[in-house]
Image (cartoon, rainbow, N blue to C red; front, side, top):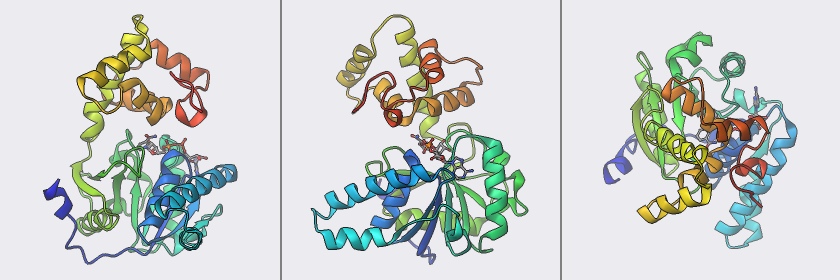
Length: 285
Ligand code: NAD
């Protein structure tokens, strides 16, 4: 931890404006975290209805952090700007993509971002399972794309993987490391590889746990076993927290299998994606 804390600390790069695309589970919380660290954030989503809940979640978080001090909350909220049209792209120092885990959608978005972003802006993807090498093919300057991979829930997870592929521009990568340090997170430099480091370990763990549900165990009992083993959260609850659609995408990418456990496939088919839809393996308030 001490070593990770010092990584990126010597970077002269200081971001002031971050543009986040995708106001879902991750994008909304990444935006709120950046605001809490003093940055101005523009938040874009193709579905306007996703922006308001992300802003309310941020306001709730600020209210807790500032213990109900309304002035401070308002001051923070002034720096979180709803930007459905994505105008902030043109000014931002760092642009973070956190949209659906779909390669074509990411290509279309990054083409548009590259055309409008400042030439020195850091272009980053928060992808969990797509290869940087595949995403960046749409760019005229593919070397400027890095992965900045936050974990869920953003406010509680200190580690952030900073991903480079062959040929990634060293200056851009150093800026991304500096940016994560600036956010007061622990930047872990990793090479582009399936699951990077953390999900390469966690993905198969969650899938195996769900396979136990296929075999007749209840989600509660699987989670209870792993919690008694010492894990802070059971693997099934973790899958619900991550989002079951994301668990499927990551699981397939990591294991190379075309099938995932039946219990998981059935829930996703029914649109029960975990916490974010109110129901997955568990029912969430
Ligand atoms: P989500 O489904 O909660 O949110 C995605 C948002 O992107 C939606 O609000 C959607 O309207 C918006 N969107 C989709 N296409 C868009 C476009 N072209 N332009 C603008 N907005 C668009 O997804 P999520 O769980 O927040 O995941 C987002 C990304 O983060 C994925 O790449 C995922 O792999 C990655 N990730 C997820 C987790 C997790 O635990 N859920 C953790 C780390 C990384």
